[in-house]
Image (cartoon, rainbow, N blue to C red; front, side, top):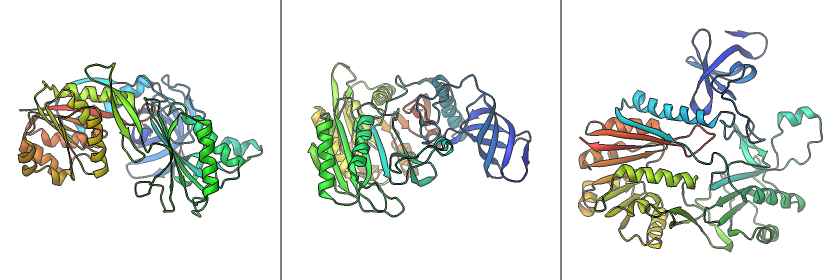
Amino acid sequence: MARRKKGPLFIDDVTVTGAGAKGKGVGKTEDGQVVFIQNAVPGDRVKVRVFKRKRSFVEGKAVEYHELSKDRVQPACEHFGTCGGCKWQNWDYSKQLEYKDSEVQNNLVRLGHVEVEEYLPILGCESDYFYRNKMEFSFSNKRWITEEEAQSGAELGTTNALGFHIPGMWDKVLNVTKCHLQPDPSNAIRNFIRQYALDHNLEFFDLREQSGLLRTVMIRTALSGENMVLIQFYDDLVEEREGLMNALIAEFPEITSLLYTINQKGNDSIYDCDVEVFHGRDHIFEVMPAYYDPSTELRFKVGPKSFYQTNPKQAHSLYVQALEFAELKGDELVYDLYTGTGTIACFLAQKAGKVVGIESVPDAIKDAKFNAEMNGLNNTTFVVGDMKDALTPSFVEEHGMPDVVVTDPPRDGMHAKVVEQLLNMKPKRIVYVSCNSATQARDLGLLQSAYRIVKSRAVDMFPQTHHIENVAVLELK
């Protein structure tokens, strides 16, 4: 029961029974009110300090642990609980998978009222750390001071930082020494850049004043062994910039693409910025085992603005699942909706008669065409267009009626017009890849009028987080 004295509100004893939005623990008060709890896992009994109150729920942080869950594990990262990422590091990975699988199934049934004939077991990730191929880090001249530092009374040292923004505090950056998300040489490159900047008195960015030299660093690593580093500078100081860039080349010969941009906008997005090549190429190549012969590889061009699945090993597992759900015999016409840079389309083209990819971003389509040609896949066509406007009867008349449609939309799911067109087209089979099972459930519920949802399988792309992908296959009734 909640009690209030002078000061903050506490709930003395809550048992965490599940996990909820954005990885928070979930429990209930004695009178049945839902409580979302930071830094608690199912099985914990905790005292909660409340910082948000709504009619239907309260939200807070665990401040005392009366009993620890048997499913707790020791977090690998020294920054756990402060940086805001990897919120489930303290929860056994097998339990993470159980929850994610359950969440997908609950969303399909509860939100979409979907009847799935068979749920296949969730596909876990072989590597639950060091799996990402892209990370972005921010500079700040006002680093976050941790609670332990503040209470220690020790000299705090430099106020400069290179790391992650603190959740809810856009102008504070946690100085990250070792991140467990991206493999080598990511940590070494980031730490070298920070130390070089400190040693040479390079100015770290002031987020409030919008001033300084060093703004952000993006690091891409690839299974091919190639590495990309892109540094955003705010001030255009040639001597300081070239000193840092030349030092990076000398220290890390494995950097095959060293890029920079001058960004004096109010945000960190590079998509409307000119990116300059300082050393190497303007892209790297990522590789993926071929479907028929895993000893050979597909190659994909990845530029600084390209989208590529951030967990490349598990992306292969995801694409294999999509291809096997498609049940291609070799002569089918396949539409790949939201094709991006054509990675799924190229994977499907290994077994399809022809694949037509549709994507709204012109640069992505350019990369898709390049990737297909580089891999010798001559049975692909890529078309630029907003999906809701492009997928029309005239498009089908021009390109042919598809036997199979594979769709991998953004988190918002498919536009209602796209769902309507799929119902009009009635392809024999639809494979729906989703990064948001809630919007997938909505779309599957609409498609259910003409389709059976035959199989569904969750695929974990992001261990230590609440995020989960799901693949479902639909057959025409």
